[in-house]
Length: 269
Image 1 (cartoon, rainbow, N blue to C red):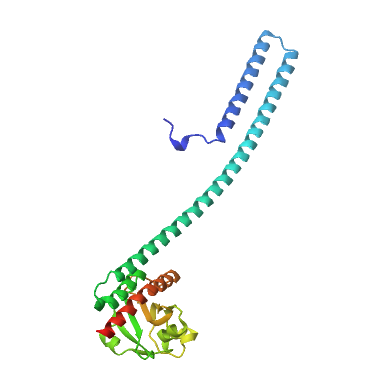
Image 2: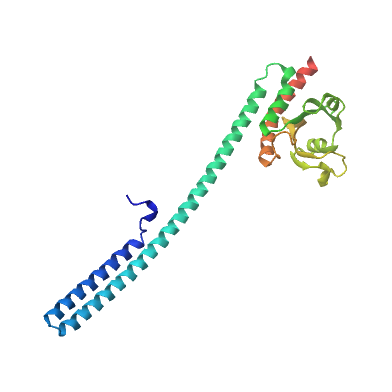
């Protein structure tokens, strides 16, 4: 059995056949000339055989050139077809990967919303919002801040990874810092590094963070607070991106309803 590496390619087989044909014609001509020479019948036959041999050689050469040219054209055409096919497959693969990412994001978002909706005891509602939000975007620190009764300041109602002392001593006035800006402008923010490096927050003193999200909690057209999420170098995630911001913003719209009802329950309790 011939090894794959030693098998002739498509362009080699026609050439091999033509070479064999030329050898056969030359051998036949030589044999004919030898036969005539032995019989001493050398005359016009030599000229005829020479012309025939030369004609056959020219025809074989022309045939080889034609086959070579045709093979080159077919090879070029096939290479172009393969290139187009490769580009088409690559585009489809990218679309499939994007579809897989979207399905994965929707699955995470559904799980996060379901986690919050499944809470039966209002006492755990705030904690479930923070926990589900961090699970959604892959963060390791977060807090839920709600406006106080006077609608003047934001107070932390639940936190994860910040510490109780920080949570108890945090009070952000409306319009102050990142959280206050988000409440006033009703827009989510994605931060990387220091917030003070952003022109909107040059006046604040802050510590550098690897990546952070701050999204508003809106219920029935009213902003009731913000959801703060962050990831450190220990979270296993390098940074948040626009997809994380969009998912957190969508989740916050559902979480705001839970937070609003929980706030009413706390006031009545």
